[in-house]
Image (tube, rainbow, N blue to C red):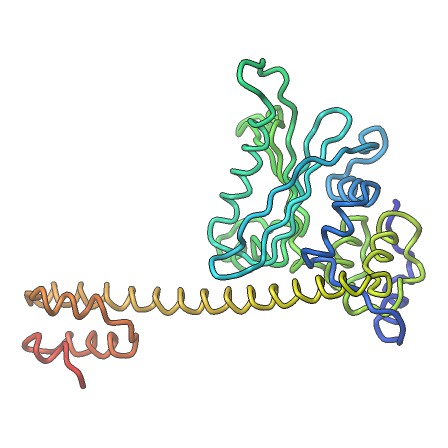
Length: 325
């Protein structure tokens, strides 16, 4: 299979990561992703064929680029979501995006954008028969369906590369292929050497910045071409500045995302404590004044809320519960 490493690949790649030599940019970087996949149709075509298992007669042979969209990633962050859009000769549209943070509503947005790409093919008055398939491909720098969560819910694990479409529930018929989805979860990259073209791409997305030379046994083709374009030695000074600027934005976005998740977790714990406190107060037969209710609702300190909760279990009045102590 094109893009598959030889049996010695893992050892040779490890050597590439340890030796001194070139420096490679992060393929997940917005600027680099655009440099590689939005300008070189042969590379993008290779990525699509590997991720969608389009081989032989089903292989994508020619594509044309379509206008892309850039949307804010998270409020307060400069980073944008970049998607690369193209259409193959048969008419199928592909929307490929790199997603760095697992933000709220991510899957909803993926579905929305895929359906939007589908319906926007028609102009007013044109027949529905002109509509062609849309495939949305999301490369995620996180686990979208973590194995631990799937295990806890007693659900089958979702593989690193998953492909989705509408299926009839009883017969399993896959007749509704008009809008399809594919997700590559980089966090699930296996420790073993890559065995497929898709795994090879995932390996490069994860490890390219650690390499100091192109892996010697990476065969000629889209993946080697991508690595050559990611070689920082091929960047002009303006391109290096743009790359580093985006790297700074990525770091800011990650820090913002971490802070938002921590804030969300703290608020969730506070809300749970307030809810438990309200139940205990009600069961004890106490009546909250508007002022006390407002004070409880405004409290964000989980430790204090838990202190009030403990007091509510044995208190003889609300004055013993909601205190400043």
